[in-house]
Image 1 (cartoon, one colour):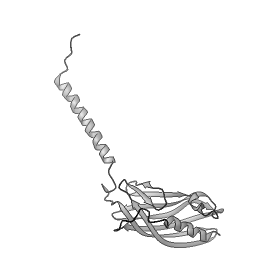
Image 2 (cartoon, rainbow, N blue to C red):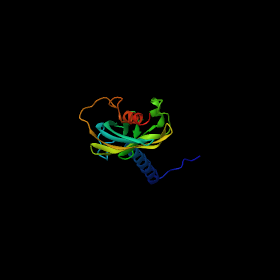
Image 3 (cartoon, one colour):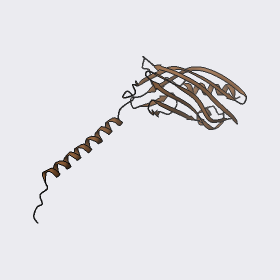
Image 4 (tube, rainbow, N blue to C red):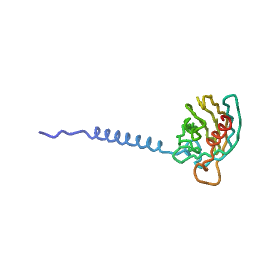
Length: 179
């Protein structure tokens, strides 16, 4: 069988297209691996501030203020105390704890709902709402509302800042309301 000759122009065009596709793929992959510092000007680290929380249940209400500690990791995940880590969506996030968190105190007997903390990072500040969604404990609808603001901390202490976080504050406030 005689060998067929492929013109140089066809071979060169195919090579240029192959290199172009390979480079386009590399650019996309690199962009996906960037951390929170790129593009949005966010700084990974520990953010500390104050949370203000109000709860109502069974005709009772109460308020409490206390510390909030958030960690923005280089991989764009946010950790808030005992909340599971969540991925940033742009510069915002929402972390949720299921009702079972409150059942660490069996007298609360929570059966449904979530306790949530949202946030938006702007520069070296993060702030957002604290709220419940469909939370029922001891047969009462429980409503949490509140907010917090935290600043990037100069000192780097261990992640989470201990066990006394905003979720623990919420549980103690609910314990005072439901007895």
